[in-house]
Amino acid sequence: MLTDKRILLIIAGGIAAYKSLDLIRQLRKRGAWVTPVLTKAGAEFVTPLAVSALAGEKVYRDLFDLTDEAEMGHIQLSRSADLVVVAPATADLMAKMAGGHANDLASTLLMATDTPVLIAPAMNVRMWEHPATRRNIATLRGDGVMVVGPNEGDMACGEYGPGRMSEPEEIVNAIETALAEGPLAGRRILVTSGPTHEPIDPVRYIANRSSGAQGTAIARALAVMGAEVVFVTGPADAERPEGVHIVEVQTAQEMLEAVQGVLPVDAAIFAAAVADWRVASASDSKLKKTKGGIPALEFAENPDILATVSQMEAGRPGLVIGFAAETDDVIANATSKRARKGCDWIVANDVSPETGVMGGHENAVTLISDEGAEHWPRMGKHEVAHQLAERIATALGSL
Ligand code: C5P
Image (cartoon, rainbow, N blue to C red):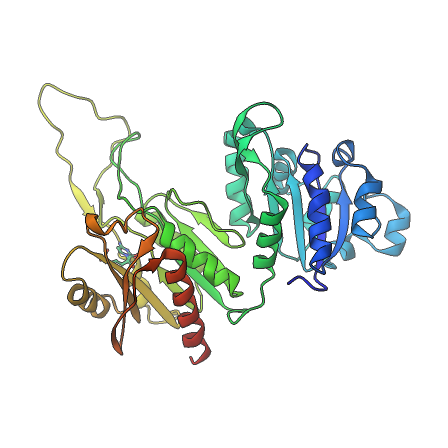
């Protein structure tokens, strides 16, 4: 519920701004207070009157509006909310945010705020896929900005692809997650997820079949229970979870660095399928077919991230959880893995092709702790995630 939560809603100039009117209505229906800010371009798409009528509050538009400054300065305005939401977040406003510009009311508020920020990007598919937008979104995620969407579909400009702003219900869900006060409120939890890609040369890499589905579901479940979640993910197919901090990496070495940058945390869940080996010296140029035969690849061992964190002498998370994806002798292998790595729990599962676990929606896991092995029935990955999140909340509560 959002009763009495204060949302500062920045509406930037995109056709999706019409959906923000419904977003205001839905937030109000859930008991939230919405203070609207309309950019100059935003006011080309929706009228200030419609925005303020739905919000039941004055709409703020101009940095140099002295009446506003007398009533409430822009610094105070930026900090008076529980959450700042930018919907739609245009390519231009995202670029300003990533670059630290402050040349109008919206960008100044975003620079001055000490409140969490959630953005709902909306733009043409080519703009979304442009390298500049890719860079900006990565920068913003790195700065702790939360992102919901965009969705894929038909666009107002007649093209098809990712770039449509999330629907108001999806944005409301992301807002609820971002503001969740649950049993894990105040807890900071790291989740690693997805495969890693280990380059052979600039176009080839070694990877595995992990979709990132289980790690994503765990990150979502923890966030819903109120945790501050940092999600370090390899190049996974699964959609990124809402309401969490996302750090994207490619290789095992990058994942280790990212994880070390995220510590300290209360708990760490290592759901990523990290490649055990990398090519010792990846080529800077594409390997060519030669008459001389097939190139020989020499491998080097990747750092074991789970073992490294489990065996930290100072600053070890209170609860460290690893995964053991096995194809045979699941329990025996997972039990010895727990001892070898030094983690507290192992979530073991059988990933033999006939189980359909890799890339599928279901999982049959066994939780291995110092109390032994506990078999969970086969269930959806979301249910596994919720049960695990509940266990984590109980364990952290008694630490
Ligand atoms: O040794 P194995 O890969 O089977 O162990 C699986 C567990 O260890 C998973 O939790 C995985 O995320 C973690 N792991 C890791 N770094 C590696 C290899 C595995 O964190 N290099």
